[in-house]
Each structure stands twice: as structure tokens, then as C-alpha cells.
Length: 441
Image 1: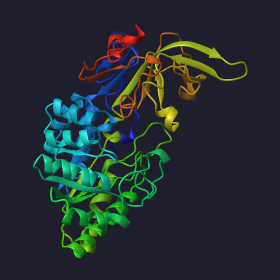
Image 2: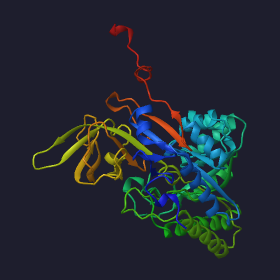
Image 3: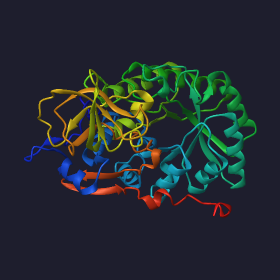
Image 4: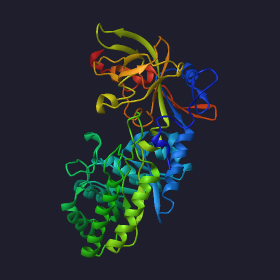
């Protein structure tokens, strides 16, 4: 069954009677005029459709837990939607913990993840009642135990491992192969288990956690990952008599950015994971543990678009035509970091003939500030509203104030309603943390 991650556009996208692109019942040109650009637009119906697809696809699994990987797009409004859709949260910083807590989220349904959690972050996580901590290294094991002891608490933990599985994705977003900054190497897993058993009495080991990467188009890597984790569960049970009852296999399912992308559906990976759980439970004669899945990009990526306003243009003699927009690498760093590609349309002229090859350039003082290279579009006029699809994941999350450009606003659209979920940054807010020392005055 096809799922929304296999489409480029949000599920409510259409061309309205004005001839403009409409999402969530809202005219994109009108949104750009009302809220300004650059503007992140999120379709609530697409987000909810994908969360429900995940739950439906895994419904035959005995004990499944969905955890939204908040790093993809983390706001209070998103926390509310995830809570309503019965998703937990996978968090990876003190700021994400604070956002979840301040939204009223049930913190017992959160997981704290990351390779270099600070003392302050771990202390804050325990104070906030974070449900589980995924421990990444020996330094963190000792630190977390000390903090838990100081708070007179016992903390439920997972051990994050590197399963030695490589998937065909960008090298910067592979996380499960052996040469990775994340997790315990399997050759040192026993040492960690023994420390928890013998010395760290304030830590309660409940399972293993692995994550093999992001923007994954393959199914079999998930089958193999489950096999590696279950083999270790069996070995730990036989060697130490310790039964681990939770397995977190991460997320990473890919989405469709351009026509050449061919991600598998949520139902396809669910079938693969469920089959692997059953096969390896039988093979290793262990009771099926609780399974945790951490989708992020595939939940919000397709739901989001970014709107820009066309500005100046430049035709290089016998070369490219550059069309500048009023945003760039500060609101979408992925093209610069990963050479990411996008599908682009003119929101006020979606049916126009694609007659011109253009390169969409950002406004920042960097030659590398290119959002889309050599794409075919109708002739662009100054003031046109340019729509980049599939920017819901990692656009705002990775945004910056480079060149002191203000961070953009975000709106949530649904059934013709548009609501601000992130205010546009002001110049006053931009400078509110700046301090001039007295000696400079």
C-alpha cells in the first residue's frame, strides 16, 4: 500500500480556482502575502496521515511503540500533534526536552538520545521525568549513574550499539556502520553490561538501541538490523542471565524529494521488521520484546513546503541563469551540506510551460548558497512565489542566523485555516543576547 512518504507533495495539494497552488485548503500565494517569506508551511492532514499509517502498518506487532524523532522538526505544536496521535518523542538535547516539557507532553513517553550528553542535560532530563535514556558510551554510563544517585532515582536505560550495517545513503547520515561516532562497538558491549550489573546500581538496563542511518530506501537493512540486535539479546541472556525486553531499531525511512527517488512504503518496512522480529525470536528462542520505532523525516518531511519570493536574476553570458530568492542556506542548509535536491514550482503559475533552465540562488554572501541547480521552470517574474516541496524535515531544525538573516516563520494549515506555530524572528530578538562590555563604551 502506498504511503505519503512516497509522494513529493502534501496529500491536500491542488490547484485552486485562482490558478494557484493550494495546500490544506490555503492558497500559497495568499499565505506568502499574509505572513511574508521565506515561510515554512506544514500540512496537518499529511502529518496525521503518516502517523496513522505507521500505527496501522505495525498493528500486528505484539508490542509496538512509535517515537517521533523530534530533531526533524521540533515545536510545541508538533508535540501536541504527536501526543494526540499517541506517539512518544525521541529527544536529543536539553532544548528539545524543554520544548516537550513546556508543551505539556507526558515525559514518561520520551527517550533521550545523543552521543555527548552534558551533565546539565542529563540532570535536567531526570528532573523532567524523561522515560528512558539511550546511553551512548562509557563516559555517559558513569555520569548518568552519578546523577541518578544524587537524585535518588533509578533510570531506565537502553544501550545504543553500532550494528555494523551500512545503508546506501549520504555518508554524513549513515550512523549504524562501525566507523561511527554513535554507540558501543559490539566488542565492548559485555564490558558495559558488566559495569551496569556490578557497579551502576542506579541504572536499569531494559534493552538495546540501534539506528542505521537516514533517508533509507532499502528494506533488507532493517531485517538485518533486527537480527543483529536479537543475537546480542540472546547472547547477553545466556552469558549473564539478563533478559532485555525492549528493542529500539531507530527510524530512517526515506522520502521522495524528486521523481528519481524511490522510497519504500511504511507498510513495506513494517512487514520486513515484523517478519524479522518473528523469525529471530524463534531462532534465538527469546520472547518477542517491545519494539520501538523512531520515524522523523518520514513523518514531517513531505508535509512541509517552503515559500520564497523571487527577486533579482542574472544571466551569465553563455552560462547559467541565476534566479535569486529572499532566503537560502539560513533556512535550508541541506543543499549546501548534502547536495540535496528538491522539486520546485511557481505557486502562482503551476501550469506554466517549463521553458527555462534556472538555478535558484539564495541571498547570502556565499557562492555555495544554491537551493536548486539547473532546473526547468516557467519563466520567473520578480515577485513570483516559489514553492520548494518536501522541506518539512531539517529545514527549520537546521536554520541559522547566518549574515544576521532573521529566522523564518512557520504556519500549520488545515481545512482552510492557517495558524502561526513559529513567529518570524524580529531584529530585536536577533540582538537580545548581544552584550557590549562597559570598557568598549
